[in-house]
Amino acid sequence: MGDTTTPTMPEAPSIQSPTTPTSPAAGYSKHIVLTTYPGQSGVDPVPLVWGAPDAKSRGPVIVTRGAGMLKRRNAMGAHGGSYSIYNALAIASGELDANFRPDFRNSEPTFNFPWQPAWADKTKIVSMDPFGHDVVNQFREELDAGWDIRPTMAITRANMKLAEIGEAVKNGELDVDGSIVVDSSGEVRVTKVAVEPVWYLPGVAERFGVDEGTLRRTLFEHTGGSYPELITRPDLKVFLPPIGGLTVYIFGPPERVSDENVKLALRIHDECNGSDVFQSDICTCRPYLAFGIREAIREAQNGGSGVVIYFRKEGRALGEVIKYLVYNARKRGGDTADKYFTRTENIAGVRDMRFQALMPDILHWLGIKKVDRMLSMSNMKHDAIVQSGIKILERVPIPEELIPSDSRVEIDAKINAGYFTTGRQYTMEELAAVKGRGWEKWEDVTVSSLFF
Ligand SMILES: [Zn+2]
Image 1: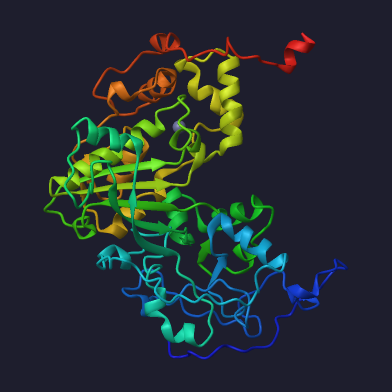
Image 2: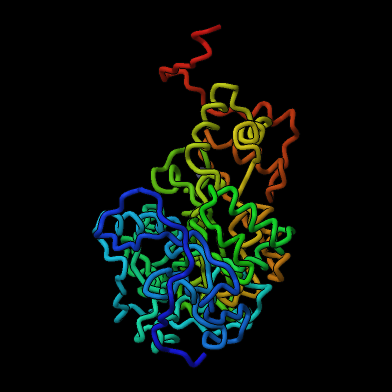
């Protein structure tokens, strides 16, 4: 790729704008380019070879439509995942210049993760850009020439303080080592990696066992027709979807994560804001997360490595509105473990939308070849990891004493449905006897009771 000059090219054929007035500050021309086509005059995407061995031969991911890049884009969607909409709002309101170029000085990673064979394997990594952390370094000339290329990953370090870790230090369950647990208050040093989704559509389709055309059509139809190039540009294979990403928390020296000769403890955690942050007691999410962090720290202190990966998939990727509707249906309909999944299926149509098929990508990016202690009971996570070629040597369930009483319904239903346990799996009859807390002491209004 020798062309490093700012591309200038004629405007794409376009459709005349309707009469919707736009603020002059937005700087839009009179016509709106609704979509582009392969072979259209001037359309010449910058080469992007997914699975190439290094960033330069792979090529930068370019999604911008601005500054003459519309016809040289090689990816669909927008940067920032779900925050792409806020970016658009900032431009619409005049707070942000549409042609703003970031100044990336000093933003480079705090740790250089070593290159892994998986970075060049288009079957192992399909949902993130394996070179997304190194954009500034790899595409400096293009950036200097004014190309809008942005990192989709960032690597930093921090200190964190969690009540449960402070307790564990106080109770003598965790030692202060001065380097991972830095003091007696339980302050912990951590390396963090944030990742935005970047989908290689042929690879994503293959993971879900559908053809690429069906995946593209479905993504187009069910985002309100938001990304017409999914249909008109089959030559573009990369899509930045408007969804949340993930964060990796690494305890202990990050170079140990890919070292097969030391032990690795891993928790894969899917977001549950109500429990993770606000500590609602209806599920086991925060207790299991805190347990996972504690065990990850412990493994790192023993000379191994501890990794916790936090995925933005709130409420089994159904979102909080669906989640609360299900809570209500459970509490009003008799909250027993045997009906736990039915309540979700009634409202969402499925019991779970997290689809762990893409989850192992980050493990391959990190260079993880085996997991010594998997701090999760989920059979879906386990199977996805193992099927992707990573061995799991031990599975560690949440300790009984950490299960809040009102969350027995959830955990027992999950165990019955195949979640890993070292204890007993309950029968459906027994599950009918596992009941959540009712709403007896709360005022409750059900609309149906007014009519019947
Ligand atoms: Zn939860």
